[in-house]
Length: 337
Image (cartoon, rainbow, N blue to C red):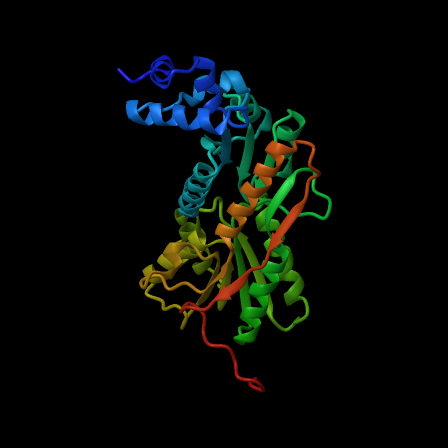
């Protein structure tokens, strides 16, 4: 059987409460006492029961990680970064899958059953109401990859999706495309709406360029493939801004099935710069979203809220940039038609 707290206390020659205080964050214990207890614990191979200690401290060190798009490979990168960063801070993730969930009260109820210390909503498609529901329930919350506003109701960390749409439009204009398309994710998603808004606003400065728009049912490979198959059956554009890398890769698959070439016949630009986008057989030109920076900034805010739950909400915006690969034709030279 695993060594117990009582055995550690006996070996160290101290009370059980002294052992408990040694392994409780913020508890008062002298350096000499701590050294004796830690030596005894090491000799016996003892590890404190963090669940039991939560009954004393009132803190579980559990952080709910809430997301709703497990079909998108980008989530694996996000999950890896979040879990490792949480563990480095002495916290533990509790993963919550909200695929097809529409009522934020259900997710709040679930996390409160586990007495989480906080929640990170990691989604670009869940509405702001999800984060607000946690805040209203008294759960510290950060919305990572959420819609950034000037007066957020909860902490939000992400990119300016409107500017990302503008950036995609400028890139396509700089390459001389005369008919461009937006192929977004779910039309109701705030990320889709904002990326389209920026895309159209920038192209409005060039009325001679034809613009079309369409929407996939999800941010997934199959949804992107299906939507591009439909587009290729009609008057398709010369180049598309696909509002996500996984949509772009689905679109590339559909284009290749038609024996068409990218970028010769159709150009594609994505968004995220997930690992797969850089693979040789994909080689996707895309807009890089700084995922690692967003994750670490979100957890920095979460750590601050655990110390000061009354901290006023703030919005943190990270810049994006284009990663040039092989799915768009070269930019026009200065002065070219």
